[in-house]
Length: 325
Image (cartoon, rainbow, N blue to C red; front, side, top):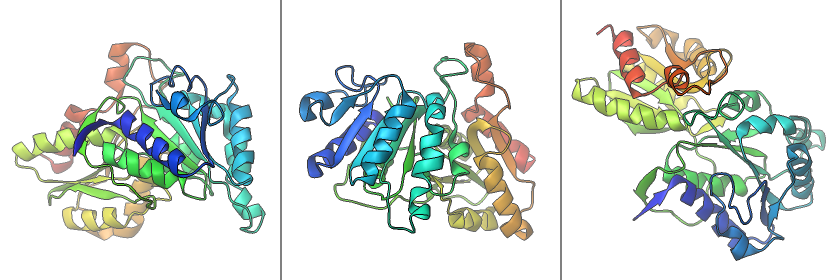
Protein backbone atom coordinates (compact mmCIF):
# COMPACT_ATOMS: atom_id res chain seq x y z
CA UNK A 1 0.00 0.00 0.00
CA UNK A 2 1.24 3.48 -0.87
CA UNK A 3 0.08 7.02 -0.18
CA UNK A 4 -1.53 8.26 -3.38
CA UNK A 5 -3.47 11.43 -4.10
CA UNK A 6 -6.79 11.61 -5.93
CA UNK A 7 -5.21 13.37 -8.91
CA UNK A 8 -2.31 10.90 -9.02
CA UNK A 9 -4.78 8.00 -9.07
CA UNK A 10 -6.59 9.44 -12.09
CA UNK A 11 -3.28 10.03 -13.88
CA UNK A 12 -2.15 6.49 -13.12
CA UNK A 13 -5.41 5.03 -14.42
CA UNK A 14 -5.13 6.96 -17.69
CA UNK A 15 -1.46 6.03 -18.00
CA UNK A 16 -2.12 2.33 -17.42
CA UNK A 17 -4.90 2.27 -20.01
CA UNK A 18 -2.83 4.15 -22.58
CA UNK A 19 0.04 1.71 -22.12
CA UNK A 20 -2.30 -1.24 -22.66
CA UNK A 21 -4.42 0.15 -25.50
CA UNK A 22 -3.10 2.33 -28.36
CA UNK A 23 -6.67 3.47 -29.11
CA UNK A 24 -6.83 5.42 -25.82
CA UNK A 25 -5.77 9.07 -25.99
CA UNK A 26 -6.26 12.28 -24.00
CA UNK A 27 -7.26 15.68 -25.33
CA UNK A 28 -8.08 19.04 -23.77
CA UNK A 29 -6.88 22.55 -23.03
CA UNK A 30 -3.33 22.96 -21.63
CA UNK A 31 -2.98 19.24 -20.87
CA UNK A 32 0.45 18.93 -22.50
CA UNK A 33 3.48 20.78 -21.12
CA UNK A 34 1.36 22.50 -18.49
CA UNK A 35 -0.19 19.21 -17.36
CA UNK A 36 -3.76 20.48 -17.17
CA UNK A 37 -5.29 23.23 -15.05
CA UNK A 38 -4.96 21.07 -11.92
CA UNK A 39 -1.88 19.08 -12.93
CA UNK A 40 -3.66 15.78 -13.45
CA UNK A 41 -1.92 14.99 -16.77
CA UNK A 42 1.50 16.24 -15.68
CA UNK A 43 4.29 14.21 -17.31
CA UNK A 44 2.03 12.36 -19.74
CA UNK A 45 3.13 14.39 -22.78
CA UNK A 46 6.74 13.26 -22.33
CA UNK A 47 5.57 9.67 -21.93
CA UNK A 48 3.12 9.41 -24.83
CA UNK A 49 3.90 12.30 -27.18
CA UNK A 50 1.69 14.95 -28.83
CA UNK A 51 -0.22 12.44 -30.97
CA UNK A 52 -1.87 10.95 -27.89
CA UNK A 53 -1.73 13.91 -25.48
CA UNK A 54 -3.48 16.44 -27.67
CA UNK A 55 -3.60 20.12 -26.73
CA UNK A 56 -6.74 21.75 -28.07
CA UNK A 57 -7.94 25.30 -28.73
CA UNK A 58 -10.36 26.96 -26.31
CA UNK A 59 -13.34 25.45 -28.10
CA UNK A 60 -15.08 22.74 -26.09
CA UNK A 61 -17.74 22.14 -28.71
CA UNK A 62 -15.09 21.47 -31.36
CA UNK A 63 -12.88 19.04 -29.49
CA UNK A 64 -15.74 17.17 -27.81
CA UNK A 65 -17.23 16.78 -31.28
CA UNK A 66 -13.87 15.44 -32.49
CA UNK A 67 -13.85 12.96 -29.61
CA UNK A 68 -17.36 11.74 -30.46
CA UNK A 69 -16.24 11.10 -34.03
CA UNK A 70 -13.09 9.31 -32.87
CA UNK A 71 -15.14 7.10 -30.53
CA UNK A 72 -17.46 6.16 -33.40
CA UNK A 73 -14.41 5.08 -35.40
CA UNK A 74 -13.16 2.74 -32.66
CA UNK A 75 -10.95 4.93 -30.48
CA UNK A 76 -11.42 5.46 -26.74
CA UNK A 77 -10.88 9.19 -26.21
CA UNK A 78 -10.60 10.88 -22.82
CA UNK A 79 -11.50 14.58 -22.84
CA UNK A 80 -10.55 16.98 -20.07
CA UNK A 81 -12.93 19.90 -19.54
CA UNK A 82 -10.89 22.43 -17.59
CA UNK A 83 -13.87 23.56 -15.49
CA UNK A 84 -17.19 21.74 -15.48
CA UNK A 85 -18.93 25.07 -16.08
CA UNK A 86 -17.64 25.01 -19.66
CA UNK A 87 -19.11 21.61 -20.44
CA UNK A 88 -22.15 23.70 -21.37
CA UNK A 89 -20.35 24.62 -24.60
CA UNK A 90 -20.44 20.94 -25.64
CA UNK A 91 -23.98 20.02 -24.58
CA UNK A 92 -25.14 19.51 -28.17
CA UNK A 93 -22.31 17.07 -28.89
CA UNK A 94 -22.96 15.13 -25.67
CA UNK A 95 -26.75 15.23 -25.34
CA UNK A 96 -27.85 15.22 -29.00
CA UNK A 97 -25.05 13.09 -30.42
CA UNK A 98 -23.01 10.91 -28.04
CA UNK A 99 -25.94 9.93 -25.83
CA UNK A 100 -28.22 9.06 -28.76
CA UNK A 101 -25.98 7.15 -31.17
CA UNK A 102 -26.41 3.70 -29.61
CA UNK A 103 -30.19 4.11 -29.81
CA UNK A 104 -30.65 5.71 -33.22
CA UNK A 105 -28.41 3.16 -34.96
CA UNK A 106 -30.21 0.18 -33.45
CA UNK A 107 -27.38 -0.75 -31.07
CA UNK A 108 -24.97 -1.10 -34.00
CA UNK A 109 -22.91 1.95 -32.97
CA UNK A 110 -21.05 2.63 -29.76
CA UNK A 111 -19.48 5.75 -28.33
CA UNK A 112 -16.80 4.87 -25.73
CA UNK A 113 -15.98 8.38 -24.57
CA UNK A 114 -14.90 9.74 -21.18
CA UNK A 115 -15.48 13.40 -20.30
CA UNK A 116 -13.40 14.44 -17.28
CA UNK A 117 -14.82 17.56 -15.68
CA UNK A 118 -13.41 19.46 -12.69
CA UNK A 119 -16.31 20.84 -10.68
CA UNK A 120 -17.32 22.06 -7.27
CA UNK A 121 -16.95 25.07 -5.03
CA UNK A 122 -14.58 25.75 -2.15
CA UNK A 123 -11.75 27.57 -3.93
CA UNK A 124 -13.32 31.02 -4.37
CA UNK A 125 -13.37 30.77 -8.16
CA UNK A 126 -16.74 32.48 -8.47
CA UNK A 127 -20.04 31.67 -10.16
CA UNK A 128 -18.71 30.53 -13.56
CA UNK A 129 -15.90 28.26 -12.31
CA UNK A 130 -17.51 26.47 -9.34
CA UNK A 131 -20.63 24.66 -10.50
CA UNK A 132 -21.69 21.04 -10.23
CA UNK A 133 -23.87 20.29 -13.26
CA UNK A 134 -24.23 16.53 -12.87
CA UNK A 135 -28.05 16.67 -12.62
CA UNK A 136 -28.22 18.05 -16.17
CA UNK A 137 -26.59 14.92 -17.55
CA UNK A 138 -28.32 12.45 -15.23
CA UNK A 139 -31.49 13.61 -16.99
CA UNK A 140 -30.14 12.37 -20.34
CA UNK A 141 -30.73 8.72 -21.31
CA UNK A 142 -27.59 7.25 -22.84
CA UNK A 143 -25.06 9.04 -20.64
CA UNK A 144 -23.42 7.53 -17.59
CA UNK A 145 -22.44 9.90 -14.79
CA UNK A 146 -19.94 8.97 -12.07
CA UNK A 147 -18.46 10.86 -9.11
CA UNK A 148 -15.82 8.92 -7.15
CA UNK A 149 -14.97 10.26 -3.71
CA UNK A 150 -11.96 8.10 -2.75
CA UNK A 151 -8.51 7.68 -4.24
CA UNK A 152 -9.04 3.97 -4.88
CA UNK A 153 -12.38 4.59 -6.58
CA UNK A 154 -10.88 7.39 -8.68
CA UNK A 155 -8.41 4.85 -10.09
CA UNK A 156 -10.72 1.88 -10.62
CA UNK A 157 -13.63 3.97 -11.89
CA UNK A 158 -11.49 5.88 -14.38
CA UNK A 159 -10.30 2.60 -15.86
CA UNK A 160 -13.85 1.26 -15.89
CA UNK A 161 -15.07 4.45 -17.60
CA UNK A 162 -12.40 4.22 -20.29
CA UNK A 163 -13.35 0.63 -21.14
CA UNK A 164 -17.10 1.24 -20.95
CA UNK A 165 -18.71 1.32 -24.40
CA UNK A 166 -20.96 4.24 -23.42
CA UNK A 167 -20.19 7.95 -22.99
CA UNK A 168 -19.27 8.60 -19.35
CA UNK A 169 -19.22 11.95 -17.55
CA UNK A 170 -16.48 11.61 -14.92
CA UNK A 171 -16.84 14.23 -12.18
CA UNK A 172 -13.70 15.33 -10.33
CA UNK A 173 -14.22 17.69 -7.41
CA UNK A 174 -11.41 20.22 -7.18
CA UNK A 175 -11.12 19.83 -3.40
CA UNK A 176 -10.49 16.09 -3.77
CA UNK A 177 -7.40 16.42 -6.00
CA UNK A 178 -4.81 16.87 -3.18
CA UNK A 179 -6.35 14.37 -0.74
CA UNK A 180 -4.07 11.37 -0.16
CA UNK A 181 -5.01 7.89 1.00
CA UNK A 182 -3.05 4.74 1.77
CA UNK A 183 -4.42 2.31 -0.79
CA UNK A 184 -3.71 -0.37 -3.37
CA UNK A 185 -4.38 0.48 -7.02
CA UNK A 186 -5.58 -2.88 -8.31
CA UNK A 187 -4.73 -3.65 -11.97
CA UNK A 188 -7.23 -5.12 -14.39
CA UNK A 189 -10.60 -4.13 -15.78
CA UNK A 190 -13.86 -3.76 -13.89
CA UNK A 191 -17.36 -2.38 -14.40
CA UNK A 192 -18.55 0.94 -13.03
CA UNK A 193 -19.66 0.25 -9.45
CA UNK A 194 -22.88 1.21 -7.71
CA UNK A 195 -23.32 2.69 -4.23
CA UNK A 196 -21.13 1.39 -1.40
CA UNK A 197 -21.58 1.37 2.37
CA UNK A 198 -18.60 3.13 3.97
CA UNK A 199 -19.80 2.83 7.56
CA UNK A 200 -22.50 0.69 9.13
CA UNK A 201 -24.91 2.03 11.73
CA UNK A 202 -28.51 1.69 12.79
CA UNK A 203 -29.57 5.20 13.79
CA UNK A 204 -29.61 7.25 10.59
CA UNK A 205 -28.73 6.81 6.91
CA UNK A 206 -26.56 9.44 5.21
CA UNK A 207 -26.25 9.33 1.41
CA UNK A 208 -23.69 11.51 -0.38
CA UNK A 209 -21.26 11.59 -3.29
CA UNK A 210 -18.07 13.28 -4.47
CA UNK A 211 -16.52 15.74 -2.00
CA UNK A 212 -19.62 15.68 0.20
CA UNK A 213 -18.77 12.06 1.04
CA UNK A 214 -15.46 13.28 2.50
CA UNK A 215 -17.37 15.76 4.69
CA UNK A 216 -19.96 13.11 5.58
CA UNK A 217 -17.23 10.72 6.73
CA UNK A 218 -15.85 13.37 9.05
CA UNK A 219 -19.35 14.10 10.34
CA UNK A 220 -20.00 10.39 10.93
CA UNK A 221 -16.93 10.20 13.19
CA UNK A 222 -18.16 13.19 15.20
CA UNK A 223 -21.64 11.70 15.51
CA UNK A 224 -20.21 8.35 16.59
CA UNK A 225 -18.50 10.07 19.53
CA UNK A 226 -21.90 11.57 20.37
CA UNK A 227 -23.52 8.15 20.43
CA UNK A 228 -25.20 8.27 16.99
CA UNK A 229 -24.45 5.38 14.63
CA UNK A 230 -24.47 6.46 10.97
CA UNK A 231 -25.06 4.17 8.01
CA UNK A 232 -23.00 6.04 5.42
CA UNK A 233 -23.50 5.34 1.72
CA UNK A 234 -21.41 6.77 -1.12
CA UNK A 235 -23.30 6.81 -4.45
CA UNK A 236 -20.25 6.66 -6.77
CA UNK A 237 -22.35 6.15 -9.92
CA UNK A 238 -25.10 8.78 -10.19
CA UNK A 239 -26.65 7.58 -13.46
CA UNK A 240 -27.86 4.96 -13.83
CA UNK A 241 -28.65 5.04 -10.11
CA UNK A 242 -29.06 1.79 -8.19
CA UNK A 243 -31.06 2.56 -5.04
CA UNK A 244 -31.06 -0.99 -3.65
CA UNK A 245 -28.56 -0.45 -0.84
CA UNK A 246 -30.19 2.88 0.07
CA UNK A 247 -33.60 1.23 0.41
CA UNK A 248 -32.13 -1.54 2.56
CA UNK A 249 -30.47 1.01 4.83
CA UNK A 250 -33.53 3.25 5.19
CA UNK A 251 -35.73 0.26 6.01
CA UNK A 252 -33.32 -0.44 8.86
CA UNK A 253 -32.73 3.09 10.22
CA UNK A 254 -36.02 4.77 9.32
CA UNK A 255 -34.22 8.10 8.81
CA UNK A 256 -32.47 9.52 5.75
CA UNK A 257 -30.25 12.55 5.19
CA UNK A 258 -29.04 13.24 1.64
CA UNK A 259 -26.02 15.53 1.33
CA UNK A 260 -25.23 17.01 -2.07
CA UNK A 261 -23.26 20.02 -3.27
CA UNK A 262 -25.89 21.04 -5.79
CA UNK A 263 -28.70 23.60 -6.07
CA UNK A 264 -31.69 22.42 -4.06
CA UNK A 265 -34.19 22.21 -6.92
CA UNK A 266 -34.47 19.24 -9.30
CA UNK A 267 -31.21 17.52 -8.39
CA UNK A 268 -29.76 14.18 -7.31
CA UNK A 269 -31.00 14.63 -3.76
CA UNK A 270 -34.55 15.23 -4.99
CA UNK A 271 -34.41 12.08 -7.14
CA UNK A 272 -33.27 9.91 -4.23
CA UNK A 273 -35.89 11.44 -1.96
CA UNK A 274 -38.58 10.64 -4.52
CA UNK A 275 -37.48 7.03 -4.88
CA UNK A 276 -37.45 6.50 -1.12
CA UNK A 277 -40.93 8.02 -0.84
CA UNK A 278 -42.20 5.73 -3.61
CA UNK A 279 -40.57 2.51 -2.41
CA UNK A 280 -39.98 2.80 1.35
CA UNK A 281 -42.67 5.18 2.62
CA UNK A 282 -43.94 2.68 5.21
CA UNK A 283 -40.47 2.34 6.72
CA UNK A 284 -39.50 5.97 7.33
CA UNK A 285 -40.35 7.45 10.71
CA UNK A 286 -39.23 11.02 9.93
CA UNK A 287 -39.40 13.21 6.81
CA UNK A 288 -36.48 12.71 4.42
CA UNK A 289 -33.97 15.52 4.97
CA UNK A 290 -31.86 17.12 2.23
CA UNK A 291 -28.75 19.23 2.82
CA UNK A 292 -27.76 21.08 -0.36
CA UNK A 293 -26.58 24.41 -1.71
CA UNK A 294 -29.22 27.15 -2.01
CA UNK A 295 -30.72 28.03 -5.39
CA UNK A 296 -28.23 30.84 -6.05
CA UNK A 297 -24.99 31.09 -8.06
CA UNK A 298 -21.79 30.28 -6.18
CA UNK A 299 -20.25 33.48 -4.84
CA UNK A 300 -16.64 34.58 -5.32
CA UNK A 301 -16.75 35.89 -1.74
CA UNK A 302 -15.05 33.33 0.53
CA UNK A 303 -17.48 33.95 3.38
CA UNK A 304 -20.58 33.69 1.19
CA UNK A 305 -19.28 30.59 -0.58
CA UNK A 306 -18.52 28.91 2.75
CA UNK A 307 -21.97 29.78 4.09
CA UNK A 308 -23.64 28.17 1.07
CA UNK A 309 -21.57 24.99 0.94
CA UNK A 310 -22.53 22.04 3.17
CA UNK A 311 -19.80 20.89 5.55
CA UNK A 312 -19.34 18.41 8.39
CA UNK A 313 -20.72 20.82 11.00
CA UNK A 314 -23.88 21.36 8.95
CA UNK A 315 -24.24 17.60 8.51
CA UNK A 316 -23.98 17.02 12.26
CA UNK A 317 -26.63 19.69 12.91
CA UNK A 318 -28.93 18.22 10.27
CA UNK A 319 -28.67 14.75 11.80
CA UNK A 320 -29.54 16.06 15.26
CA UNK A 321 -32.52 17.92 13.83
CA UNK A 322 -33.62 14.81 11.95
CA UNK A 323 -33.43 12.73 15.11
CA UNK A 324 -35.00 15.39 17.30
CA UNK A 325 -31.98 15.48 19.59
